[in-house]
Length: 425
Image (cartoon, rainbow, N blue to C red; front, side, top):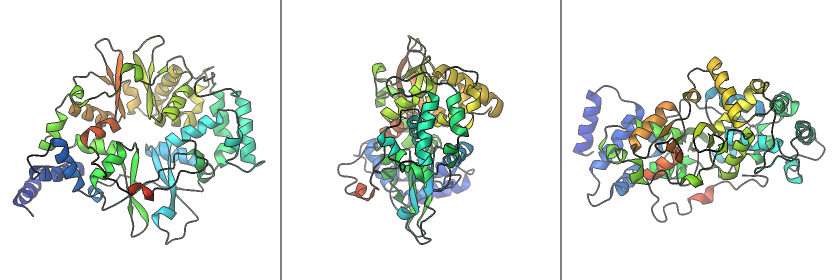
C-alpha cells in the first residue's frame, strides 16, 4: 500500500463518518493522485475507474425480485411501491443449482410495460396475436379490449383521443390480472440482458450505462448464481453528488454545461408533446425514440409546462380512477390529475416540484446536485425567455465523464442473451 493511501485511510478514520459513495470517491481520489501527469483528465478518470471493481459500488437498498409466474398487475404494484424502474424476473422453473443466466429470464421495467400498454391501444395484428396461441382467452381479451376502447386507428404518429374508461376497463379485466410476466416477455425490453461480474470494472459499468444506453446493470455472484446488486444511472449520479470536494470531481464538476458540450441537441431536435395531445402520444414518442421522458409544451409555443416519463405509466395502471372526470386524457389533463392525486397520497413526490429547468451557464456540479436531490432523470435547458433549448439526461452526464478506449469491449457482448423473436423494441 502506498504512503498516500495510508494517509488517506488515516484521514478517513479520523473524520466524521462518510457515506459509502463518498468513501468510494476517496478511492478514486487516491488513484487520481498517482496517475501519470501527461494524461488528460479524461484519461486519468478512465484509468481510475478501470482500477476499481464494481463490487465496490454500494449495494442497492432493496434486492427486489419478481417471480416469472407473477401477474402483470403484481409487477406494476411492486415497481410502484418500491419506487423503482425495473426488477429482475426469476424463472420459477429454474433448478436450485442454475447459473445466473438460467435463473433469470430478464428484467421487467416500466418501459416494457409502457410498450405493452401501447399494444393494447393499437388494432390487433397477426404479429401481436402471435404472442399467444390462437383462440386463447388472452388473445381474445386483446381483441376485446381494443375493440371496446374504440382505438382501432391509434398509431404512433396519429394518436386518437383516449378516455379514462379505457384504463379502468384494462386494469379491472381478468386479462390484466391473470396475464403472467413470462407470457408477454416478448413485448418487454429484455435484450440485451447483460450482467457484470463483481470483478468487472467501474469503467465497464459506466460505459454500459452511458454509451450503450442501459438504464441499469445487474452485478452477478457467479458462486450462488444470483444477482448481487443492480447499479442504475441514478445511483451513479448520487455517487457523483456525494463526491463534492474531491479534486478529481471538482476539476470536472466546476465546468459549465456549455464547456462540456451539453446539451447535445438543438431546440429543433427536442422530442416533445403538446399539452392538448393525448397522453398516449407521449408514451408512443418515448417508445419510438427509445427515450425515458418528454417535455409537455404549451400549444403553439416552446415553453415547457411539465414532463412525462416512462415511470409515469404507473399512474395509468395503479390509479386509473383519477381520469374519470376527463373525456380525453390529454398530456395537460394527465399532469393535472397526477398532481391532484399526489397532493393527497404522496406529498414528497418529485413530480410536485413542477418542471425543473436550468441555463447553459450552470455548472455540471450544480446540475448533478439538483438531479440527485430532486430525484429526477432529466433537466430541460431554457433561454432567458423560458423557451426550450435542450434536454440533459443522466446518461448524458455519465457519458461526459468517461470515454471508451479503442477495442475496449472486444468480445464482451458475445455473452449477451439474443433478442427474443417477438420483441418489438
